[in-house]
Length: 258
Image (cartoon, rainbow, N blue to C red; front, top):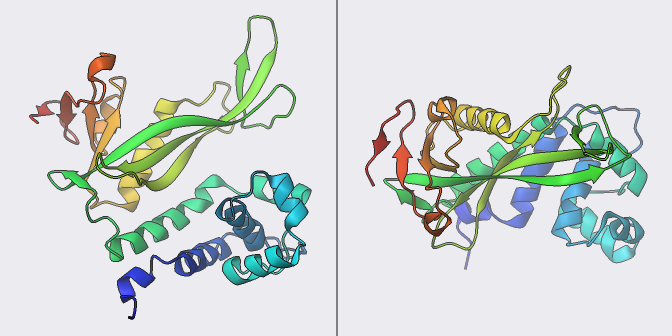
């Protein structure tokens, strides 16, 4: 039986092809022996092939089976070594990856992958949460956040704000483009989750102007975020944490009755 055309767009080969086409649009240095697109696709392969570490991926990249999988699934002719892998990816602006999320989400919409995810009057539930992915007392860069401890030591860190579409009856979630929590150029103060949420929601509204969203946030969310989407103010009590108390519409301060 032939697979419907709409579902073919959500197959792994189709999604990986879309990812490669988006990566090709990112400016690259032609003098490099391995193109940037192969470094980025290798990053997808690292997770797609479920490697426990970058070191393990580096050790297996020359194996016959691994090379065949990288070539067939990800279009990688030559996988980069561990050191060069890190150096090239560190140069990539995180905002350059937003187009990939946008194109993949468009494929999901065309493939009817959002069916069953609408929850409140045709709106989709958007959950935001911050997470850390790097911490060191020695290694750092200009965009690292800084944590000063009482004993005089200093910790450098990187964090990001993740965004996913969720539904109470679905185990799966639909990830959207995350927002890095980075020290901005020339700034002396650390970036914070609130500012990252503002940037994320503004970008999300610009990229998906017709997508109806209800955003779950803590009561600290200010009025700037209400202009970009609806959001749910949760009660402070832990016992009622999962029960929305008030839903605020975009651009309004008065709650919508549930």
